[in-house]
Length: 390
Ligand code: PSV
Ligand code: MN
Ligand code: MN
Image 1 (cartoon, rainbow, N blue to C red):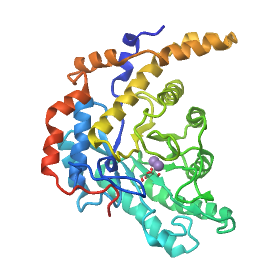
Image 2 (cartoon, rainbow, N blue to C red; image 1 turned 135 degrees about the vertical axis):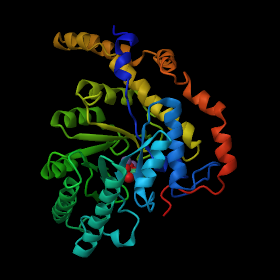
Image 3 (cartoon, rainbow, N blue to C red; image 1 turned 45 degrees about the vertical axis):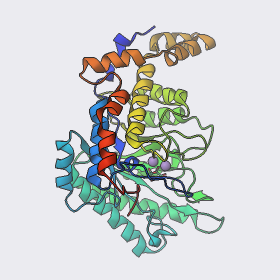
Image 4 (cartoon, rainbow, N blue to C red; image 1 turned 90 degrees about the vertical axis):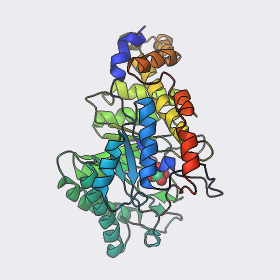
């Protein structure tokens, strides 16, 4: 049995990027509820993200979404973030809120509209140059609602061409920038989606080059999908660029990661540990993509990063030698028992002590709630903005 002491050092430096939009008001198509203390500006979202990091030590960067987080001076925004102890991470493009994109953006049949969408990505690359971001993340809302509505094959070809143009420009930024292409099996299109699954994303990014990767959003799969298998496969192929972590009961629910199915999160993180997708030598970006519709947002984010840390610790606890021996012996139940022993280990007291040794609060949630930050923002910020408010 592996002990916490044996794995403690591997938790050092774990980083989980938080999304700026998690701090804004969000909801469903039925209602967006306001939450007292919601940020009114990008700067206030960054301040909240920095607060999550201050209490947990786990979230050193915040992802931005363009144009939701558009400002005049991104170099100044970067300095502002750094002064608060955080950094600007992934830049997300947005081609899903413009009338011109009703029938497609990067896949549109009209070259002028495709160019407009490509130019938007160029703008995101300019932002990355100013913020020092590594990753451009692309999620496309493109697809069709009715059989025959569009030429699915032609759309793939136009997508490939548009992505190539964006990728070539990205390569001029420097040696480290990457393009990550996110997939989602449905919504907002209901019949076909242009990037519905990891295979399509993989096919598209492989055609681009080595610095194009797949982004796996845990909420973007059909119920019952074995997501950890996809993780294993993408790591094997060297194309797992990033995660958008969240949890779901039904569709793309964007709930707190590890809330709906902690065991699934454990299984995913085990494949990361197993496949080189975790630790200082890994390039896989761990991000959250969540909304907090009814709960307070900063505590929601604190809970989320702690859930990832907790399941990471449990995944590291799997006795890999014992597991391999049982697997090779054909010891079905023995292998399963090794796996489950780690999953059922309560690491919370160990993690509390581990945090305290590093000058962090043993219980970040309690420390945040006692800090007065929440009361302060609720008093100061009246009329906070909606996530994705343009
Ligand atoms: C789409 O459902 C998604 O998961 C993409 O990552 C977007 O950028 C994000 O949600 C925010 O709408
Ligand atoms: Mn996502
Ligand atoms: Mn999503």
